[in-house]
Length: 431
Image (cartoon, rainbow, N blue to C red; front, side):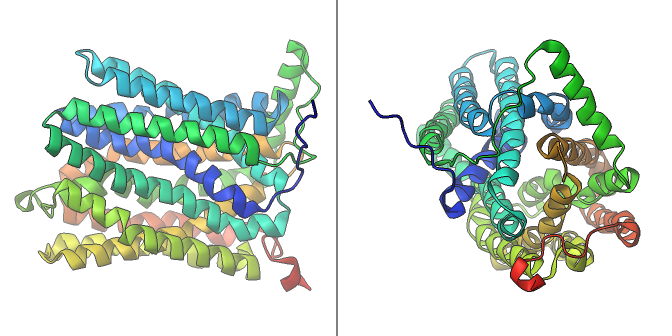
């Protein structure tokens, strides 16, 4: 019987969109969908913020096991294996939601799913860098971040709409959310099958030969040492922690702001209206922002666009400030505000992803990229934990003014950032 031929190259459009959509879904399920679900189950905002913020932890600490993903097996093997485990975790959540001990059990499955998802991130990002050259990475960084964010919009939009519909049609909240998570589990089974056959086998994607415990630990130590002795490491870490400061706080309060009643400063939208806004207008705006960001970065390079993209990821948040000030009743204005914010995010996030790739270059690029994303997760976790308390102290309007100031530290750092002017620029542009 003939063995399956191992295709070393496949059109990136065949696997990048699905791979990064699969990377984003479990993250949004853990960090966003769970927030709304637990709210519908009757938990307090304090409990929800505490429990869901701690679920960031696997993404924060994933650098500690990323070297093992780099050393053992191939990135391709880790991708398909983790997609199967994520599907199992989603099914576990679905099974336990109708039970009396749903909170403890679902949190345990969410945490295990987060661990598998973080491992999947390590492998997928490493695979991306091994399977594409520099110019392809620059071009597709906007595409990959767009589909990652599309997964987020799907979770905040379509999944919430589905759960809301099932709540109304069945009158059973636990059953409705259980069915929603069963559907997610089935989707990940499809991802597992698709990527098992479609992902290419890049020649560079080979596990290291160091398999003895001593050799593994030596490689592990060398990986961390080589990262923290990189030139400009202090500025780089500060940039990683601060670039998404405003978004880290906004993402925890955007949906509550839209859902809260007008007498407490919110807009009083229904769950379905929030889902529709993020699932339609948000999708279109995010897609345009991500694609345009990738195109302009591939033409002129990261250095040229670092400052404009840093402004773009925060300045559009002013749309939420205007909503808080005027509290419009017209649903169109809400959609306009979300469109502006999502476009800015899609465009501005491109520079951040490119910088992580740039700083990860070298022998241990997969593990170093994972360390970078660990700092990114920490930069989301810590401000997110404090965001709810800050908002309660300030109110929505002053809170949105506060997050507008969060761009200042990043803008102060940018003049000192050292970036190769040619990095990310298309070879055709370079001539």
